[in-house]
Length: 487
RNA sequence: GCUCCGAUGGUGUAGUCCGGCCAAGCAUAUCGGCCUUUCGAGCCGACGACCCGGGUCCGAAUCCCGGUCGGAGCACCA
Image 1 (cartoon, chains in turn purple, red):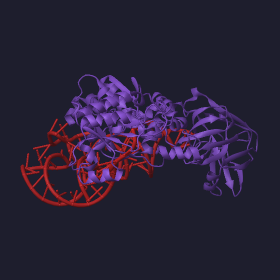
Image 2 (image 1 turned 60 degrees about the vertical axis):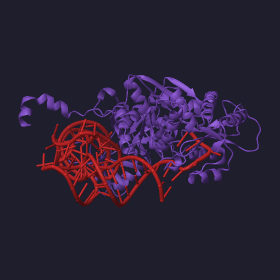
Image 3 (image 1 turned 180 degrees about the horizontal axis):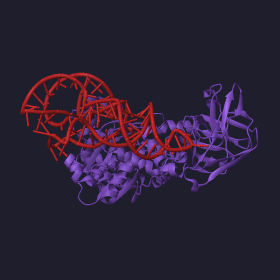
Image 4 (image 1 turned 180 degrees about the vertical axis):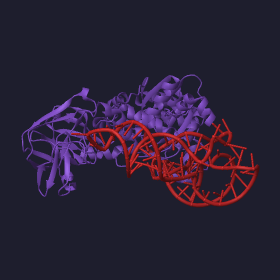
């Protein structure tokens, strides 16, 4: 090693450089790939979805090919009409460039045709058992009476049902698998059921809708998917879907199931979000308390942050906790250099500086980069200033502290006296402050609470991501309001 | 309960397929130092992990067996 270091110092140095993390290669890639994003339009995309968006997008970018955005809207009772557009916008914002858009509700005839193919080959049957009976039979590995219906009769029943014929019982179409499969979840599963309800796209044209396992299997084949990567929650679904591929002689895509990510401190369940929005608890889908893409974007998270985070997390089957620390740290890298610095005094208390001369405070907009400019404040003698209540509490009686960019002050009980302007010398506590011309300001935090205080006057017109020194990065959205981003 | 999957520091990961270069790398967090009129950035340092028990082997984070723990799914959501 020592010898190597002497002979090839430049090579070893190269190794020390931090290397970009790279996702593992996919298996069985032959030329280009076809992959997909398959959200349901029950709401906009949220933090949890960004992983599948980024991973699929990354692989298509690596290998070339198609990235299909397939909106899975075969359950009219679970659709938010606005979501179709929201999802597209979320993808666009994330920098995920899909090459095809597929809406499943427009493909009903394809599903019907494939269903007929399966029925006529004896792989599926129409069933009118009561739900409890059907479940009981499966648990006991016994066939229900309808399992032996002839294909001809099944086709007749299917066409009647799909043709919106009025009927007393609500039949379902069942895919035959293996009644003795060790995993009861894999045994004969339901492919179509009747849903009475108006679909935002197709109205009342259809009522016999395919379930996810059916439409997904058909589309994954029809659209020529080569690789399907999704969460481990779909492992059993994959097993179910494989039966369709087998029965119809289709080639299986390469499947990969990544581990579940537990995300704390946030509401991710779309049903909960929806409830909160209708009840007025949340202001909308972009409420700062929600982790939808639109909310995170509004607070100031960058698209690159999502990408880097999920690439760093890699593709593995282990479950993991989402780390806001790491996520925020990545985001900081992207926003820091363009964020100007300003003073915001949260929970301000007034102090009068006795014996202070006229002075001008000159503060960098960005540390050590004079070229970016300054904020300047001319102060009268004996000025009234505001500092944070929390800082005041920490300052001991008799202590000399420094107002950043201004001068030193000594505390004597509840009064404050000028203590020179010398920067150097003994280390002093440095705190921020604002003058009398500051204005009222509110920061809205992701836990739903607000911080109120005073913002220095030069920041008032500024909009966008800034750093409020010693407080946090925020996205300033108006003269008097900002959204908390992260420290 | 049944089926399947997984297990590297506080957290996220690299390495595991094809055992030795791993007395385990990186990031983040925490602590300390430098720098600095920020809590940020940068630089330096500290801290801290191969779930347990057997087996195979000259040699195991890596292979085999058993256990423990954790997770996912369990049917008319996606």
